[in-house]
Image 1: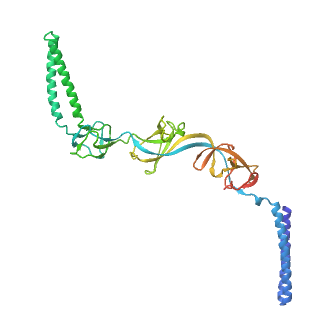
Image 2 (image 1 turned 90 degrees about the vertical axis):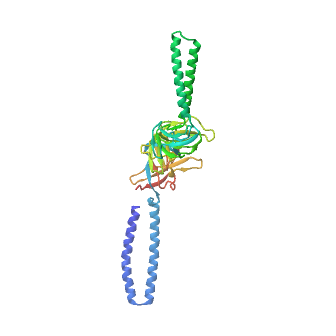
Length: 390
């Protein structure tokens, strides 16, 4: 090849020298101002040009055969390296809380008093509203007076009985009367207590549904909504094939698109029951909510860590091809020289889980293997390639 380049340069110099002579000769012919002489000179130059083109073509053919570099496809490559691979299951869920309750009355009557307003914080057991008891309070007061009399009668009869004064039947009658009166008071107190609406847990009054003065029915009328945002969680359904991978304590990244925030948490409970209707099981994911920005029924996107490989080989899915037998393969570089020219060899691989645009390679390549990236679809097995990584 070196000799051909030298021959080509010498030919150019000779042509240049000859061209100088021809140029001077052409000037003389032009100065002659003779048409026949000018036409003859032109024909001579055309003949020389054709001869020169033929020689150049021969030189190009020789260069093409000997200079194989220009036939080598240009590719980029990367080196496969082991890294930690955390595969995640992406699924959607809704925020909820166990401390969300619409309070209904336990007694029929008129809602005489509402002691709270929307947005007000309340404590467990705090009085929220009062229903007219229909005279139960007066009945209770009378019954307590009768109970006090029965108690006094019983205590006196007991003292006489202990002194062996009076009959046993008188003692037993006094005791029975007192106990029945006490039981009647307890029952009436329970009825009166139902006219008082109290908070079952601490929280915030989210909505006052029924206004003061309305007639309410036990177990039916919705009085107010009470919510506590301290214990928030997400409950979602997971396909049964993940039952061995999605377990209590697994890491979860929760994204709230509406809020533009992301929370890292864990699965706090995984169900043991498979729903036969949709073949799923439930998981519960606790959500920290210190700033109270997360509300019930808020939509969330979950990324649940269901698989981890500490020494995974990951490659782009786009460089993988498939043969007629359904086997997946990539091209690896071997015999690379100091000019970054090597040989592309087809290698059958076995793949595992995917995440985004990368896939885990289980077998076929090793740590440090150089793999063809850009140009992987155009190279052939055993072909020389030139690596031009940027």
